[in-house]
Length: 311
View (spheres, rainbow, N blue to C red):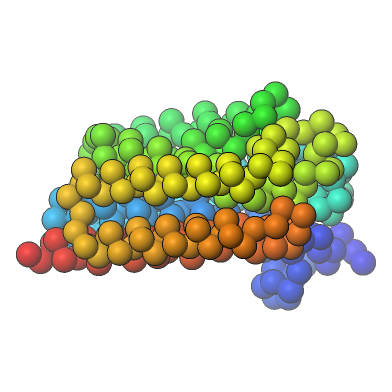
């Protein structure tokens, strides 16, 4: 099998494998366009905050554009982040069964080519960011510090999921920065709730690699919690729900948003009950299901924002 047609081990049968031009496939795999779940999870806090902020402002006129711009920005910036992660982790990825077929450790593209594709995606992200106000632009740029250091955290701390949460939840601040031109207590509490959610779902994800990570000395909350993962999730997921609920209360949310939060919470309970940390395939499915959990909450916030804008 050629380098262009070789597939990543845990991603098969997707549009990249079946429809993308052969020369482009390694780049799309590098940025996980064959596995968009990470982009969706990055997007969810952006959409939550955009809808909540629009509800506070009682104005949804710009919300469709903000939603669309956040969608583009989340996908290209997650792609750029994955490229950076793979560049820094290329030697480690070669030692892990699930990741050794990624484009860089598999030799499908060079580090220089990966850097070039990273820059291209970052420029698209910058073009999106420049559509917003100055405060939002500066807020978005500030997130790059966290993104830059994240790949190194798994080497030095048992809690790299916290740093991932700081990065992946940044959108909870961006919606307020874009719509209201400020970051207030409501935004900060929503951000904290999202961080707790990210720690939970990425712990589930990390259980896929726990054995390989132990062999090569990579740290994670999956390895830290081990058999106590259900207990840990029973802390982080409820904390996420409570903090997001406080944000809704601070933002004056109405009943549709609360129904969305209840549905979100019920989904998290289902994940905890269903989880078997020894079943890697199940861990991946539960991790991916967090997109649906996030969309349930967003749907409630969106209906709430529309209702508040017309009454």
